[in-house]
Image (cartoon, rainbow, N blue to C red):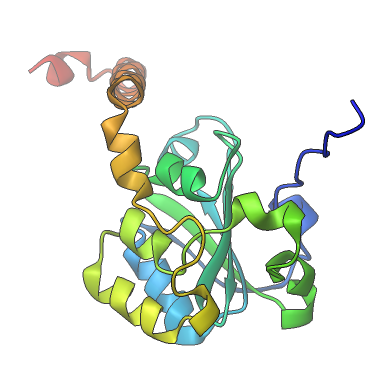
Length: 197
């Protein structure tokens, strides 16, 4: 159809310049890597492997791009979700492996340009990850304080986690998947009896 636009291209790791690895760690929560990126004024991206990937599940990964430590775009490859929906998909997936990469600002200039329509669906509010993933009020305030004036009330500045939790079917599906994964791991490790207790 002539009026249709092509689907936007997600900012996946494979499409981003490699950058310089700053740190890589398994974190029990999202607050630590987000706070470190803010402290470092990191321009680049965080590559996130959710908990199920660490336990030998699929090879899903998510990306959060940053400008001076402030989140700009988010994409979750496991759920093929973008923007606030990507944050909702990542919520509750800790522990996570997070790799932090530094890039020159011009390497992300086109992606981060608010006039770039193709990346608009991936935009998140500056404090969105601190709120929706880390649930860290102090980090939310710190992030908002250093965010550019024109991004303080960016598109997508709504509570993605609340929207996720309000979807009872999706929450129950996540719980069922977690139970099934736990039972499979318990059986694999010979701990079925202990799990039953």
